[in-house]
Length: 194
Image 1 (cartoon, rainbow, N blue to C red):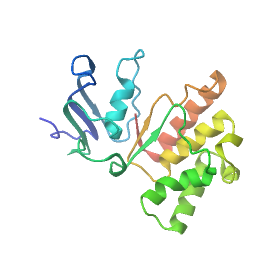
Image 2 (image 1 turned 120 degrees about the vertical axis):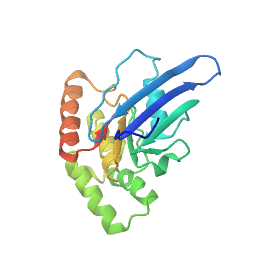
Image 3 (image 1 turned 120 degrees about the horizontal axis):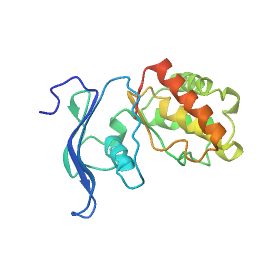
């Protein structure tokens, strides 16, 4: 029975189909503990991104239930789930500065100016980009843009951070460096990462 254990995230009998026939996700039963760092591996088309999109609220399961901290989130809109998301293409707003990109999720949550400024400074320092707040994404390297995307996912202190191939666009050396950075941030903050 869903919700009877202490899992932080729980997928219970989750299935997803887009055409009513082919299952992209088939009978997914998964429990993720609070503070866990879970990596999903599988070939292209195996349902990894779809699973993350269902957890984030951008897709709805065709069948089954998804619980967060014991509560069903199936009908909860994405912005109320308190989940940070890092995409492979970073999804930064090119017309905004780095600070404005980080302020966006805080404004959506109606935080005051002083609190926003403090959280932005902390997030930029966390990813070692404190001096880059006034730059636009196009003025940054790929690795710097990736760190801004990570900072934006963490700036509002989410309970859960989802990463959809966040290192795929980086070269091997930078990918290895960012893997260590993400792991250190995970350990420092104790946030759950999928």
